[in-house]
View 1 (cartoon, rainbow, N blue to C red):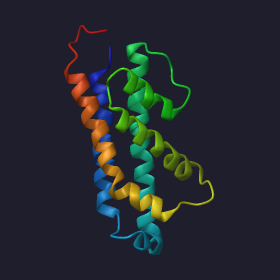
View 2: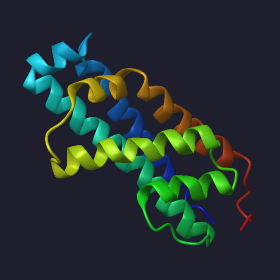
View 3: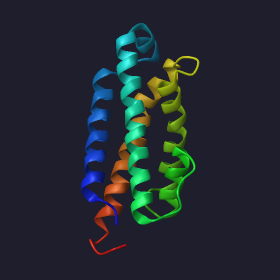
Length: 145
């Protein structure tokens, strides 16, 4: 059974990180390129947003006893397979793992255009994930396994 307290804490962390992205993003990709501090804050918080989502997926998969995912992206697919999130949300978060990896590992620098897109349009995908997970958990009774 899914640990509701843990998932609620992770979703609260996700909400906080999303608000930090909103507070620090610039109006344009060029603005991010010109402000290293803004770029760092936005990219770092986006990375932590995706990581929080991946943590939620991993906990849900383990708690429900579903087959383990071989990658972060596959974790979102597993949630989709079990009706937790939509295929659209799963695909969007799967793509977001790529940005997370670039930021986390510093692969060839960060593309400010991609970060800006994630900080604007991509936030909807993160919010969809949180809403879909919360809705799925709300349908479960404490005795569901």
